[in-house]
Amino acid sequence: MPTRRSFGLFFPSSLFLALVTLVPQPALAVPTEPNELANPLFQAVDCQNCHTFNNAMGQDDQPLYAPFYGWQGSLMANAARDPVFWAGVALADQDEPGETIDCVRCHSPRAFLEGRGNAISIDELQPQDLEGVSCELCHRMTDQGEIGNARYAVDDVPGVGGLVPRHGPWEYAMGEPGPPHDWVFDPFTGSSQLCGTCHDVTTSRERLADDGTPLGFNFNEQRTYSEWANSSFAQPGMGFQSCQDCHMPAVADVPGCNQLVDMSSHATGGRRHDLVGANRFMVELLQAEYGNQGTGDIPDFFFNQTLDRMDEFIATAATLEVEGPAEVHLGEGLEGLAATVTNNTGHKLPSGYSEGRIMWLEVIATYGDQTVWTSGQWMEGVGPQDDDQLRSYQGVADELATGISQHLLLNDHWVEDTRIPPLGLVEDIQTDPVGSRYTLGNDGTWPNFDVAEYAFEGLSDVVDVTPDDATDDMLQIDVRLLYLINTPDYIQLLADDNRTNEAGSEVAMLFETMGGAPPIVLAEDSVTVPIVGFGEPPSSSTGADSTAGNLTGGNDTAVATDSAGTMGSTATDAGPGQDDDDGGGCACSSRDDSQRGAWWLLVPMGLVARRRRLRARA
Image (cartoon, rainbow, N blue to C red):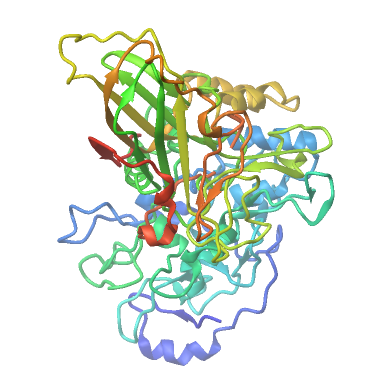
């Protein structure tokens, strides 16, 4: 249990020594329930006064690390403003009246703690409730709560200075200038377990197997924390990476507040409060609503800080490597194209809330200005092209008895979960993939990568534009890993199925006003393949068709495994269904081929003119 102290900036050490033994110790707690706090949460504006400042000298060129600068524009701060959240709450309450209190418990802790947890509309909140996951919730949270469903325990025992201590990862030595408020050194504040308080979600429905057999536990709607806990990232040692290591990057030698800038700093414990994921479009939408051109409640400066950090962060989520054949005859078709997607994050990619989310591979092969072959091509206002070879990564759940999907509280069955596991994910029914996409390795872990192979039919109508030069014809193949947080179908469903209020129609209007949510590019790569022939294939050739390699057919087929039990997949998906993260992630781990067994044996050789472009575009 952390030691409680009050150590003001000018607090006499002699008085501190006299009083420290009088500081009450917090009693063992259970999750804090509504109207239990004798000391309500302070508003974030009270923290802003001291925790907004410029970087110290010598760090001017670094991203701003004052806590308020990172937090205010984030989706943590704006969790209670998210219009998609409120549209989903209205629909969920319509399906299961009275069961959305856990949603508010997580997205607006103040509303829950002050007795407004039954709100199903943003209009039912008080202005201060819109702070979302605010400073004091995390910095007063203790480890006496529970993992999942926002069962937080909030410290409510005042320190010697009269305030409930702020918990944090810093400790001040005797005589060292400290903050002008009560504080307590508490390792829990910087732990993944604190994040797990909200980032595992279980509903009230019992989960069912495909044949309807109850599995003995309630539906595991989100398991972001458990995915991390079951992965290599959670194991002690050199490879350990906490949630904070990715989402709150450490900053060395920083001050704690504006009263200590260039006066006193800590070599360890400082973290930027970036708190970013991959939901870029929602930050832009919130900026339009609440920024300078909207209500003006939140200056654009804060949103821009978040968007900048998000752009950097998104580029670390995945690695994409594309390999193709040595040459191609367009009349015969294309075989031997393979795309390998590696998950660099500490959880599934994507993770979290799955309704309306999909990640997929877009493949576009061009010759000059002609598009020759495509798979998964992004179609504005529609989603990914629905073709037989579409390679998607998503979690699709439904109510087994009715087949109704995208209704959160009705879900009791996972139709599929093709999201890419994190490195070292061990077998556990709560976090296992669902379907035949992945094969458990001999070491008892799931692969953290996926290999998608493609074959395209021959074409007779592509004309050589330089018939006098047989050496200049090249097929350009561009592959992008795209992620769409809210598909057009899902947004329309929120509007069409909601009979409770106008939240669904309002969010559909907001999306339309913004021009719709575009996908973000997590990674991209390309290859250039020499073209050795056009038109009809030679009479001796049987040609290649879209069924070669068992690559089509609408459903996942069995994957190929090597001698080490590592997966090299040749299956395709059923098409674009609805698939987290706030998906995002970070390159917290390094990976070499030894971590992937002999997967390379499954990838075609003889590649030419390979160009890697592993950057993300917002």
